[in-house]
Amino acid sequence: MQPAGRQSQHAIHSYAMQASPIGREILQTFAPGGDFVAAPGNDGPASNHRRLAGIIRRVPEAISPDIDFKLLADPEAQALIKAIAEFPDRIAQAAVEYEPSVISRYLLDLSTRIHSFLHERRVLDGQVEGRDPAEVRRARVLLVALAKKVLAEALELLGIEAVEQM
Image (tube, rainbow, N blue to C red):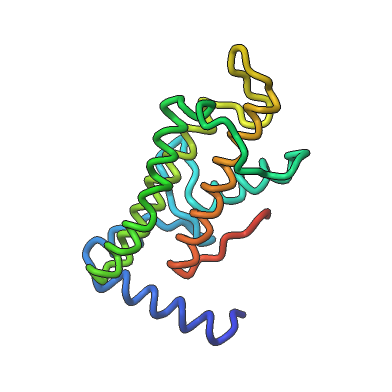
């Protein structure tokens, strides 16, 4: 049984989503358990959050912003960085338009970018020719940590708890 406040938050969220044609479409993409149904071969936002948390748990050193950003120049990392950078604009757009589905669509796009990055680039034991593997790992783990933080914040805006593990 959910606490009364959580039930109210869920009811308000459901009403807000159903009040909009786009919101109704987004609601139809939810799977049992609160995760989004994503395209085949892709994970939904909550699953991606758990996946990123699992990667971070396996990192031996502290996450630091002191990295060589040239190590994130590949197309998948750049697409993910751009998607992360769009988050404040999507929040503003959702607020101006009174349209929570803007955040839902953003989450689906961000999840696609995360999936592409993780599919193409190894995070914990990645290689870049002529570079120290630990340096590559630090750069990619920082990007993973940022994506995880944005996923958690966007899910929270929609009233969905971002759990670290099942």
